[in-house]
Length: 415
View (cartoon, one colour):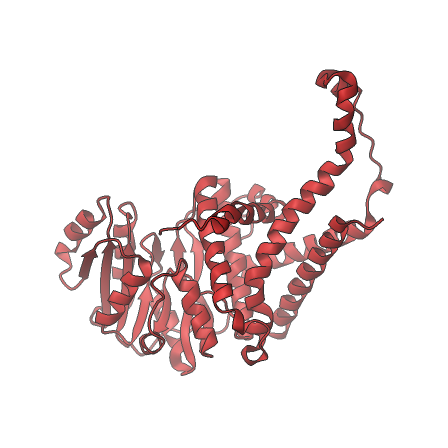
């Protein structure tokens, strides 16, 4: 008998397999995914903004990475914004910039990242606008690789190859793999003009486009995602560069990880609703038909996976648990008499076949992601690779479940 859980699982299998195969076909149709390695021979004025809120541990290394850029110093404007930090961020920045009088420093009460970026947008002089999160660090050649993308006049934004910085524990190593996979998919999305989000660390924009669109949404939880959707709505081109590298710190513990993911997914959910008129609208091509609906659908899939996994895993043992009442809930007697029998014929071969297909495709995608990011698959070890393949999706599903109460009770996030 086909149960609701079976139906949900098959729907999840179909959707997941469909999209994985779809993007692999895009990959095979675009063999030169990395593209030629070009460095800028033109040096327009670029404004790099570093918004910070309680970033005393990382703000100075972030600023130093910008100062180390291989780019004419007279063509580089650096603006640091302290958004109401309550730690030593302001004190450390003021002490540091004594030796760099050209660095501009703004300090104000906590008004949010979007409002801080808009303040910088109004006063900066560069032709191009970059935000570098204060917990991220840019490679010295990144800007030289990003600028040539704008030789195409239709390009409004170029994304760097964002990697996790120096992963130390298993969780951070898992995220290292995740970031590379995301970059690989974004490159594929770029071929179809449907990149959904430009990350905070060192995405570069034409300033004139940002001003034309009215700047950042100051009341948005994920202002970088909202800006990307705004660019897509107005048919601007966004590209993923595979040479310009930027490194960002990732959560080192489960609590920080779930906190970050809840903010991301909550922003994705509300921005998906905000731009719902773009969904399934052929006017917006593959972005409207495929990518934007996934902002909402990914949450539904994540939650469904958790509940169906729990249901199918626990269902066979429900009767055994009910039988405990016959032995006065004597767990030791129950466990002593409990036996497990499993043979190869007990497998659901249809489900097992789908699982094997998904596993091999996932391994292939992971390999491609590492290869095109110039990383060795086992450079960080092997255990995190297995955990990423088999358990990481469960963590993302849990993130969505933890988000539900915050959405229902309208809990406000801060950056």
